Structure formats: C-alpha cells, structure tokens
Image (cartoon, rainbow, N blue to C red):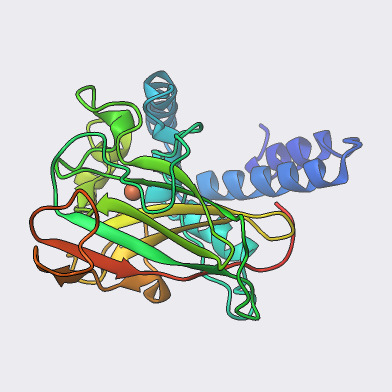
Length: 286
Ligand SMILES: [Fe+2]
C-alpha cells in the first residue's frame, strides 16, 4: 500500500525537472499545502467529489458578466492577502483594495466634472480630489477609471435594464492633478449569492453584504497602478465586509448638501452630497 507521504513526495518530485524556477516553487508549494490540507482534515472521497462539483459549477457560471472565481478569491480573503503581499504600504501612498468582479474594460472617456449616470436614480454625489505623488505634487494626465453600483444595488454589467456605460467612466486628471465627476451615493449590496459562493456563505452563517463604496483604478506612467475604493463612512457593514476589503484609510464622509447650495453641480436639482478624496500614487511600473 502506498502511504500518503509517499504520494505527496512523488508528486513533488515530478516537478523537479521544471525549467522555470518560479513555476516549480509555486507547484511545489501548492501540492505540499493541498496534500497537507487533505491529510489534516481527513478529506473524505465524497467531500472531494463535492469540491470538484463546486469548481465545475463555478466554471459554468463564469463568463463575461459573472465571475464566480473572483468571488471565491474575494470571499475566502485570498484577494486581500495577495493585495497585502504586493502592497506593503509605500510611505503615504493611497492604500489598495480588491478589484472585485464588476470592473469592465472600455468605460467611456468623460470630461472633468461630467456625470457618469446614464439614467436617473439615487442621490447625486460629487466626487472630487487630486491625484498626487508621494511629495504631494500633482500627477497631471493620470487616468481614473471609476465604476459603482446604482440605487438598485446593481452594477451596469449585472443589470439588463441599465445602459452598458451606466455609472462607469474614465477621467484624466487636470494640470493641477484635479479630478471630479458626478456619481450617485453608492449603496451596500450583497455579492452574488445565488451560486456556489453564496451557498458557502449561507452554510457557514456568513452574510453576503459589502459596505457602500465606489471603485477607482488610477494609472499614470512611472507610477504603480492603484486599484482602490472610496467607502462611505455612514454605511453599514464596514466592520463585516463579505470580502474583507475595508481599510480605515479608505473611508470617507459623504457630506450632505442642500438643493440650494451654491456649489450645486450642473444637472442636479434636489439634495445631493459630496466626497473629497485625494489619491496618492507610489512610483513604479504596472
Ligand atoms: Fe463593488
């Protein structure tokens, strides 16, 4: 009979000839930990078969509009762990957090101060700030790719009734690093919980909710790409985000503003709110 240890050793040895040292290291680590997991938990055959069915279903669900594997990565905290390993917090740069499953390439380019809403709904939110380097000098021309959910909790990629470009846009920082756009106040939402990730959450007594936030991805030549959020300080779930993505430095107050406020943005007729958020990029590439 072959012992568990001999099986693990044989699989590890099968990668010894791998010419790519990093690939060899990753596969060695993966096999060692995966085998140790099975051995320590005394993983039963039916449990492993169930895991394979769950992965199969996750693959079937995943396509252009649904990404169950990012949800697994987020809900198991792997996204935030990889993020923490990659970004050790370079002195004063804005902290990063998860990309999430709802980013989509090709958001429309919009002018400074433009609205990202393609249809009505929600409380208008004037989002503004500057893109700066570590010395607080402006980074002119930095690109901000923003996306957020609507009053009905959905991102445009999830909502067949929303125009494709709804609540998404790309902006360029001005010469002084300034950026601004008119969004809507984001609302808390559950991560999609009608698939395998949702069943895991329900079976373990976890809730699927994320606190209200906007997503921002900021790129500029010579600087590290930043993927981050602006969290609403008044939102529930800041202390129990289903994907562990809250960092205190990313929480901002959305200030209520009245309809007759002289700074009321064009196109706003009722009450609105504003949030100030400077973005600081670390030098580097990619
Ligand atoms: Fe989100």
